[in-house]
Image (cartoon, rainbow, N blue to C red; front, top):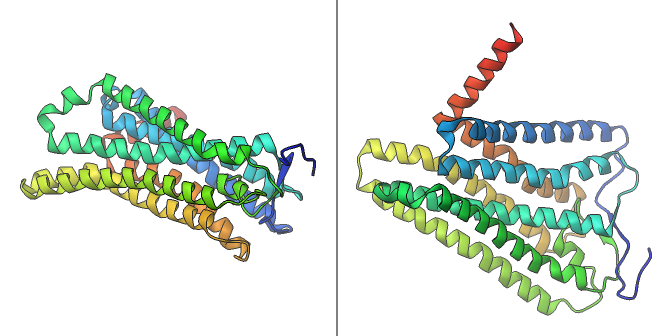
Amino acid sequence: MKSNNSLTPSYFQFTVFADYGPLRYLFFSLSLLIYMTIISANLVIVLSVCLENSLHQPMYIFICSLCLNSLYGSTGFFPRFLMDLLSNTHFISCPLCFTQMYVITTYLGHEVSLLTVMAYDRFAAICQPLHYHSKMTFRTVLLLLILVVLYTVGGAAYVLYQPTTLPLCGNKLNRIYCNDWSVTELSCEDLTAIRITSHFYAIAFFFIHLSFILYTYLRILLVCRRSSSEFRGKALQTCLPHIVTFGNFCISVLCEVLLNRYNIDEVNPSVVIALSLEFLIIPPIINPLVYGLNLPQIRAVVTGFLRAEKRLLFT
């Protein structure tokens, strides 16, 4: 391992990959199938929203953005992971490690910010229906999406500043991808202050978003309680996919927090890999399935595309 004056390694080594022998090809095939499924499912939703004029509405634009973010996060993880499954050595250069760290961090920030914006969209549609179209104009939607990107990029810059400037005394990562906290723990310096700061930032970041989402759904529940059963049914139909997506994302983030904040050196590598994959696989698969199957407008468009493609194949 080469070092410079700041003791920064020129590469890192993933230590949780085991020698699976011929089974590596089975794991590679399954992982490639999952990656292709994520790409296909999310692309179907993205293309449906982009090509169908009736879906050019705020809710569907946000769903499209959520699927684009799934493609972004998966692409930042799977190509490298697939290569590691087939490789006998698991080294990654420092620039590539920090690039992957940036992509996964911004993927996480975009996801929680988009889910928060989508909660506001449902709140405005259900609790303030008469003012919805005047509030959620195309300009407002575009502004919200820009704010999501800028807010996430700013937060990621803060999160990644520490591991890129700390002197590091090792290069072994007990993970299957580069993560800001796993790199920070390699520091030669005392991490007490950094640990307190990072915990406070993480708690504040998620508490703000979680509080706002819970507030919007409390207001929605109060409105539905005073409304007719037909209105409650329609409200539930549009809110249920978001609730499922948000709940699944919270579970995924909890798995990531457990991996980041606790000593996992003595944990079975298979458990580490499973928890890491849950965070990077389940939301990108669940999101398009939940929205594609539960929202009749998207389901109708996707079904129409599939029927048209089938007719072309048999003509």
